[in-house]
Image (cartoon, rainbow, N blue to C red; front, side, top):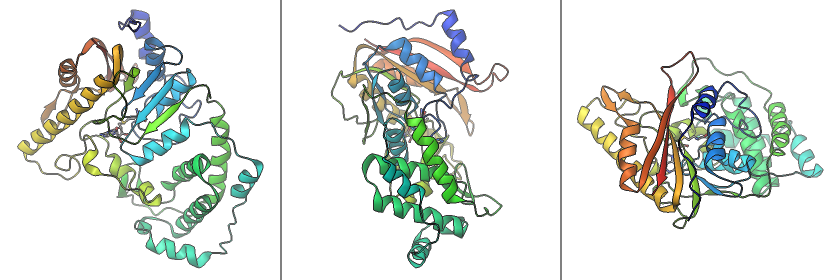
Length: 372
Ligand SMILES: C[S@@+](CC[C@H](N)C(=O)[O-])C[C@H]1O[C@@H](n2cnc3c(N)ncnc32)[C@H](O)[C@@H]1O
């Protein structure tokens, strides 16, 4: 029988939790790549410390940029992450893997030749790139040149690391918003892509040294609705699920995916429904249907979470506050709680965390379930 941690938050813990966000959030590898909707790292940190012990297994089935897995590593917990977004999986792998580069490897990429001896080849690739119209031509040429060097000279973990260093520059090279292909008005200037990339490599290599090596962090290429883990193998789940009609990660990472020749199966994504997102129809019945599909998908994910969680294990979900989606009320926390109960996940505690002490209209709810 697993040890049963106390899931109730006492007053002083609630106070600590409410103050989270006022502290530094850029430590370790957390901001190696900026991912919209990223956790404030102290949230998973607090939950992992409270509900698990050294070398336990922590799972985040909607891991995004891997904040839970990074915190698990820093606290000497093993971890699994799942995300249907290939950019999220790549970033999580890189943020949780300590690597070292030999001097030769580092020098080769740092001394990347800015003189384009392969000018014609790169120009040709620029023309073929489907989003080239959004880019400052010089910037795109440099990005593609670096990409070529990485693919030709590096493999495995080092290649992944360098690709993430490259991806983090993409949005500053093109006329695109933070949330994807929507064109921003002003045309981007040519920037010193090589210099910024080199700086990223050096700064990020240093960040990786903060990681521990006595635990594993594994990113699974599956869907939260069908988790490729055996039953009862996870001690703690810490996650923030995708919301309906909030961030459209397919759109946000369209260009990054094109750059890496990655494709994603849209139908696996939870919460991205064209009838509601973007310019979708105003038909109320379609909206209700989209909400129904969202909760059906979330129920499948919850049943999988319950299957892989050990008895007495804790599942902690950080969810958006209730809101209206084009006049349709969307009671996220209570709907998820109802569905969790069907799969033996019983709500033991919940509370709000405001974004700041002054701003009480923004923030999230922390739900703590125990598997009975
Ligand atoms: C709110 S974000 C998580 C952010 C994360 N906590 C972090 O710190 O970066 C939700 C994530 O769920 C992912 N997602 C959507 N549908 C999914 C599915 N069916 N299975 C796994 N992940 C999914 C999205 O790609 C997105 O990265």
